[in-house]
Image (cartoon, rainbow, N blue to C red; front, side):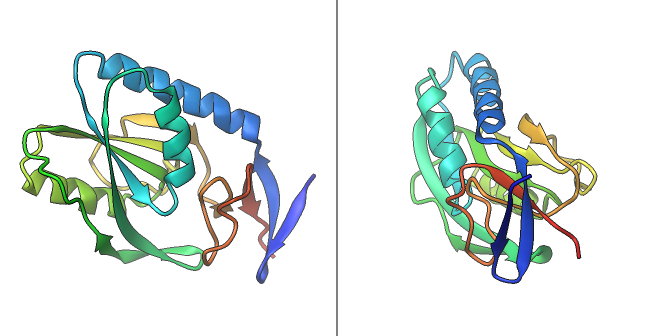
Length: 179
């Protein structure tokens, strides 16, 4: 079992790069089917979703536009109840179909915030694609449309996900070791 240390925490390998690639292909196939007659705007949520977003985009066969948005709701190992909108969309998105690309959905606070902001901008519809989803943590009513991997409510790093800004560059996903 492969273990790493990031700052003061130990992590054990949890999801391999090959498993992640299979999940990316699955999500891409679902999006390709859903949007075969549309040109959606893909909104990658920075910073964590850069890697998943890039890999997903390479596998999309539908035409799409790309944009980015930066929001944050994490401090250390825990999601906060407050979402900070740091960088928003600059293009006109009115009456457009939007696909939000997330690295993880757990409480749903960030997704709910982004969804509301986009609906306020009068988009046609909003769907979300997430690499990882914590169904036991999710308490919102919005559907999660495209899910790569369902995971338990444990803190993870790697493949875009971080602990205090570190670990995003790991090709595999690691789960925190509770001490």
